[in-house]
Every structure is written in structure tokens, then in C-alpha cells.
Image (cartoon, rainbow, N blue to C red):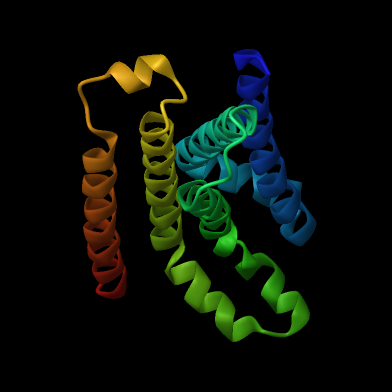
Length: 179
């Protein structure tokens, strides 16, 4: 599989995330609301879509490279795939508030709207952690000669990213509660 195919998979995944976002909001509250929300949150949406696309492309690359080496899928690949899905869920969780009144759970709407920025922050941080997990997997297994030769230990980068993301998540949660 060529590198171009992995890039196409990544771009397609990012575009599908944006289409899912637009579809959920449009179905729940109409095109005008979707356009207003997109204009308000465009930079967050772009970061989330790009991060998700990078994860999808890297995941595709890792799976193909491991398959070519006849290696079994590692736990780190499974974990990074889980983080990809988790970042998408965290990104869109606050949009449940658009649908909940329709199914009679309006009380939960207030909670999700209040924590919207927290969920977006969690989605971005999940993307960053997922990307570093995948880069560490690529380096550890020598799947990309350029990354394997870098003097940067991606294992340490991964650990630092996870600790930093945990701290930022905690701070974002506390700030959200007290504002």
C-alpha cells in the first residue's frame, strides 16, 4: 500500500468526522444552527478533524506495515485505535444536547452544554495522545526508517504527552466546574 493511500484514508476520515458533525446538528436543529455552531467553533473542528485524520492515516499505515511483516497487532495499536474512537466520541458528546430533548431527556442537555468546552478539550488531547502512541509504535517496530533513526525517543514523548494531557484535562475540568 502506498503512502498516498494512507494520506487519502486520513483525509477521508477527517472529512467523515466533519460530515458526521454537520449531519447530527443539521438533523437535530437545522442548517442555520449548524452554520452558526460551525462558525463559532471552526478552529476546534479543524483541529479535531485534522487530528482524527492523522490518527486514521497512521493507524492504516501501522496495520499494513505489521501485516506485511506478518506480525500480530500489538496492544499499542489497539490502544491508539481506541483513542481515535474516544476522541471522536468526546468531540461529539456535547452534541447529544441537540438530540436529548427530542427523546425526553432534557435535564442532561444542561449538563452537556455546560461541559462543551471540556469535551472539546478532551477530544483534542485524545487526538494528541493517540498520535504519539502511534508514532511510538512505528518507531519501536521500525516501521518507518526515518522515524526509527530520529534521536528522539518516542516512548518518552508518549509518556510526557500522556502526563501533560492528564494534567490539562484535570485543569480544564476544574475550570469548567468553577466557571
